[in-house]
Image 1: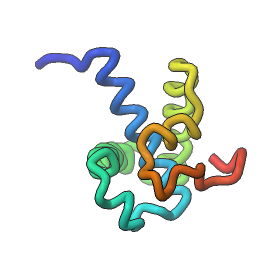
Image 2: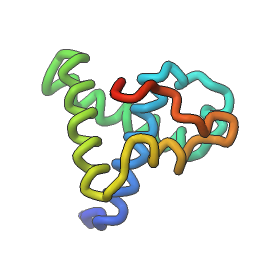
Image 3: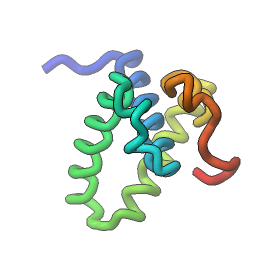
Image 4: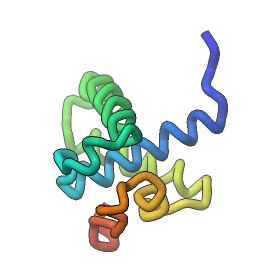
Length: 104
């Protein structure tokens, strides 16, 4: 089994952060996002990990906290913020960051 490269891991974490932003902003059913290949991949990654974490934690708040802190740390290590990830993947119609500062 081949391990993912550091770059692949960073891509996965940014996609998961993208989905987490959309989820917290209640945008997961937005037609513009649903057409995006990046969003589809992000959704698949998030759902797969959520199922695994549900078995471990059995609590949605614990899962949300895990994602927030894990993703925030990964972004920080790349010198990125949540807003940077959103700008990277969001469709033009949704480029404005959808959450108020400090809401993540």
